[in-house]
Structure formats: C-alpha cells, structure tokens
Image (tube, rainbow, N blue to C red; front, side):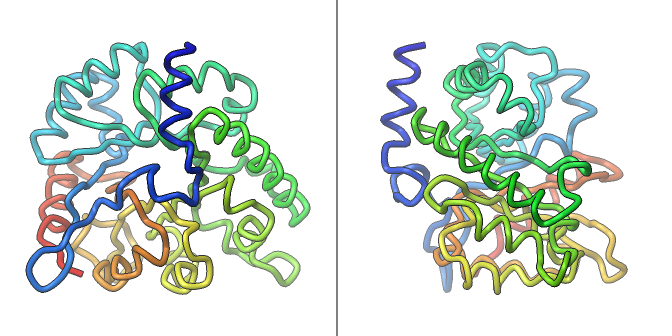
Length: 280
C-alpha cells in the first residue's frame, strides 16, 4: 500500500490544473490534429464483460483502442484486471464509481486505483433523491470538493459525468452551472457527455469556452437527426469543431460510448475508425 500510494502521489503531484497528470491524447497530422489515443467506456460491452472480461479486453485492444474506462470489475480482483490490461497493452485512466462507494470505502478505492492504474475516479451520476433542489446540488458539490481533496492527497483526481437532467432549469438556474460554480477547479474535474448535454439543449462548446480547463474527459457519443444515439460519425454532432477546443476545455481523454448498441463490437469498431480518421 505504501509503495502504491507513493507512486500515485508522484503521478498526481501537480494537481488537476497541472499538465503532468495525463497527456492530451492528440497529435499533429496532415492539415490538422488527430487523436492518437482513443478510449472506450466498457459499459458499452457490458454483456461480454459479464461473460469474459479477459476476452473482451483482448477484442477491444484488437480494434485499436489504447484506453478503457471501467464501470465495474465483474468479480475480478484488481490484480487480475491489471494483468489483463497489461497483456493487451491497454491503460485504464478512469473508472466510474458511485458517490456512495467513494465516500464509504475510500481506502479500498484508492487501493484499486493504484493497482489497476486509474488516474480519475469519476462519479457517474447523482441519485434522484439527492438532486431535488438547487440546495441539493450545492450539497453534492461540497461532497465532491471533500472527495477531490482526498483524491489529490492520494495522487488521484475526482471527476463527475453528466447526463441530461443537470441542464433542466431549477428556480431560474441550471444545476450543472451550480456544480461548476460550487466545486473547486483544483479539486474536481468534469467528464462531459456530449450526447446528453446536446439532448438537453446545451452547447458543449460554450461550456468549454466559459469554463476553461474544467473538462478533462469527454464521452464521445453521436446523435441521429431523430435524437437517438448512434455510432460516432453516423450522426449530426460536429466533433471536429468540438475537439478544436480541446486545449481550451482541458480535454485529456476521449472515450467512446454507446448505451445500447445493436452490436456492441461493430459499434465501437465503427466509432474507432471514424475517430482515427478525424482531423480537427
């Protein structure tokens, strides 16, 4: 534990605002930039994760993905997960963990992060009964700040992943704006889900410009004209324009996700091909 904590502390010593925590995941190529590291949220392939974690990670790596984001470990130990990642040349910079789990079992989650190699512990949502008012959101923001302080002390970073409900106005304010205002930028990062903010009528580019450096991760998901979720590149979202704001936004990880694809592996393969060819 001590060696692992020392490693994590060295990794994250510069804090959320430092450039040394993680790379940007993009490089120069041709007329513009291209992504050189692309991740996938393993929730997309959860059924095959349930059947065989190791084989699923092998198939993800074979497509070309370099990074994965976990949403559960499917009865594998942290050491088993790390071994499977190493076997396939994968990194797992982030994992989704519930707010309650982080608050109630923090030491264990730090241990998991150190073994698996996570840099970000991302809260995936807020329970419905904990977001009934703006005061509720303010209270959650303070919980995020406390966990963010603990994360920084352990060489980690805390993040929050949005859905659409955070953009539904309450008492003349947008709850997501409250979360941004009430959380310390040095302690709490955000994982912008591009599909859900656009579903709610929000403008991700405006948030990137208005809150520079706050969005360290993005969920790359596309939207058809009818509002349904489709493979990346098959819909209407202008990813090139959004990714052109990566440096302003602070984006360091680009993570493909599709909540309910007809064929998960065909979906993530199509999304990967599109993103590898995208210039911005």
